[in-house]
Length: 272
Ligand SMILES: Nc1ncnc2c1ncn2[C@@H]1O[C@H](COP(=O)(O)OP(=O)(O)O)[C@@H](O)[C@H]1O
Ligand SMILES: [Mg+2]
Image (cartoon, rainbow, N blue to C red; front, side):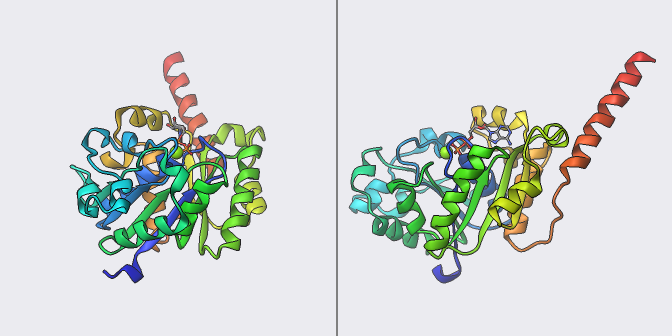
């Protein structure tokens, strides 16, 4: 596959802590499992942790910094995932890279990686400052991650403005940490509210799932072990939709009813 057909996708949000790095790791593994040669790039030089989420932190020898300086070859810096060799991580260099890195540097790195990968996912830092702009310069498409919270949606809206004015296309939305019960009780913005405000197509809907936190701490993305949890299914479906498959979205209202129904059944069993 030539670099021209490589999809370079920025994973961004504006607000921090909404699930960008988690999505990058899980989507990366899911795409790799679907046979796509996938590279994930940590562009959060200040607070890098994509290596941790992928469990690759002990295998880093070189980073994007040495590649740019010409002191190592790209292949030496890319860390291949042992269980999923279609996936490689290009680690972020020293946080001081923030002081000198330019948009052209990021473009150069991504162009090099694109030569041998089908997908390049760029994990952006929070904010809309220099670090974000550098990361954006290297991408053609974007996935905006938000939670159904007013502050996260407002930050996402500002980011979408910047992406639009920089010609990033397409821009798709992943709504993360959805809690069906809170949505049903109108304690949380509804899916339609968020898609109406942001005017983006919905690429995926990820439920609040404590397995995500467990997997983060283990350094093993959920998608590594199939689709046994709701979030793992959601991330896998994001990968399938990204590749053009028509996979229906879950309906949080039904998820909510399902949960209550299941709980109800449990209660009945216990009582009788
Ligand atoms: N769907 C989810 N359910 C539960 N916890 C989640 C979910 N998505 C992310 N998290 C947790 O939220 C925290 C922030 O996620 P992270 O991906 O690091 O955000 P960001 O990269 O946007 O700063 C992590 O502790 C992660 O485990
Ligand atoms: Mg992050």
